Structure formats: structure tokens, C-alpha cells
Image (tube, rainbow, N blue to C red; front, top):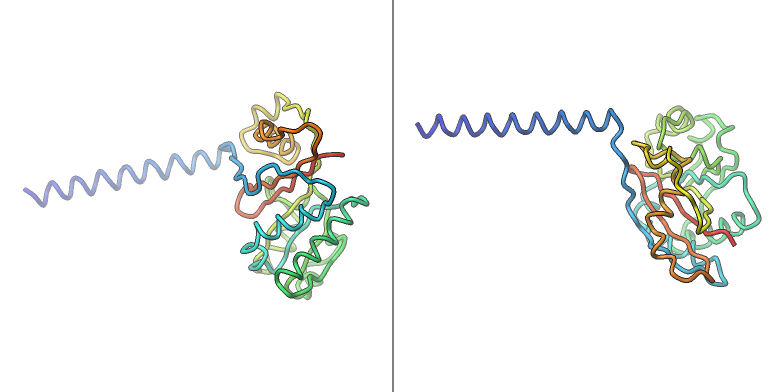
Length: 216
């Protein structure tokens, strides 16, 4: 009798597990809303933007250490983003004692050319290609087949008065077009001093990192 009760309990647990798994699979396929993981809270930039690189490299230490490739969504570049990238290069070398190899306009390179870039290899590409929020041919065809660890980091500028459109508000899965307004809404209460510029870092999916930098 005891054995029969145990079998019934095991059967119930198996059934519950199957139901939970089916629900999770359904949610994933139908597009469950993505929740962002805050990695760096809104922080005052001050007079020296080097603080952005310093804090980010420290916060992403394990991810950067493991990554063979870092896909940087920084193009089209501006004077400010170019200066910030030089700070990132300095901070990376200071932290890991190994200079990064830079491949600009990486989307125009073949997978073979990218494969010849030794670790740590930084790929500079368009902002819309440095994430996996939606299917990404650049990553699927040129990075993933190399079977090396990689992460994506995208520079995104924002204003305090970002408005979340109805489309973004109803979106089931976050898209790049909605990343800025939705993320700013999530942190707006932390942008306490209107006279200061802020930056913050958030993570989506397994390896999509977005660095938000307030406009001057």
C-alpha cells in the first residue's frame, strides 16, 4: 500500500513537471515579456566620461574575461563614442593586462576573417546588429559558428523625457526600437538631479548588454 502511494506521488510530480515545462515552452514561443536585469544603477557621469568605462569593465569583469569576442554596437561613431571607446580600451588593458584587437565595420568581414582575430577581439558594428533581441544574421552566420564565447554591448543615448509608445507598451518581446524608452521608464525615479547627466547598464537575454548614456 505504501508502495502504491509512492507511485501515485511520483506520477503526480511527473505530471506537474510536464505541465510546467509545457507552459514555459508556450510562453517562450508566444513571446513572454522580457525583464531587464539592472547591472549598474543610474550613476552621475560628472566631468569625466572615463567613469562609464571604469564602472562597466568592473561590473562585466567575468563576462569580458571569458569572451573571445565582444560585439560593440557603436556605429555610426561620434566624437563622444570614439573617445569613450579609447577609455574602454585603456580600462580593459589595465584590468586584464592584454590589449584588445579591434575589427571595425565587422559586418563587412567574413566569418573566416573574424575567426583569425585572436582573443580578446572587439568587433565594432552597427547598433542594430549588436544584440539578439530578434534573429540576427550577422551573429547567426558569422559569430555563432565559430563556437567561441561572445557578448554584445550596445551604446544607446537617451533623454529624460523618453515616451513609451503604445506599441512598445504592448510589446510581448522587447525589440531594439523599444529598449530605450522602456528602460528609461524603469529607472526614471533614480534620475534624481535634473542638472546632471547619468548612465546605466542593463542586461537582456543571456549576453545582450545595453549601456545607456544620457544626452548632454
